Length: 143
Image 1: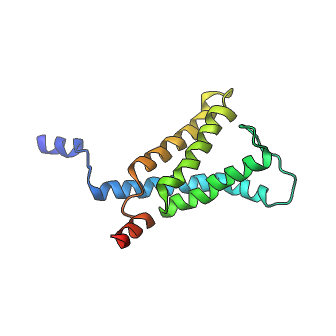
Image 2 (image 1 turned 60 degrees about the vertical axis):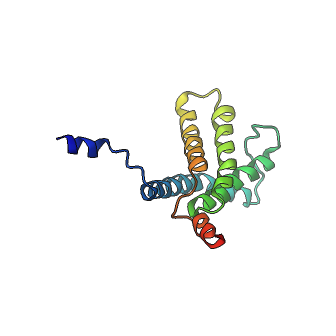
Image 3 (image 1 turned 90 degrees about the horizontal axis):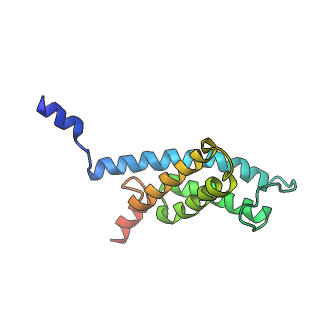
């Protein structure tokens, strides 16, 4: 009984399990963020007049370009695990702007998703991409 309980309560921290967890977290967060950014990218390159929120006063076009940069390019970098700790910075910023400025007057349910994304990106930034990433491959070649 004690052995079964200790298996159940085992924190499971190993380099391998953390790397697998980071791969899953990067893939899920990156792919879901990419789905949010894809429509924005299409709007940016559609040739139509830009109608996008300007939450921090940079102008609609600049705000859209920055959102596309974060939600498309940085999401792709996150998925493949390249420059991961740098890629999450614009993603965190974009999600915090969405949660705290764009949806500031909305109910918690509208702030919840960008806040969750920001927390996931922060975790990836703190822990790193893990063994299953381009960052890891590049670090092995430089040693």
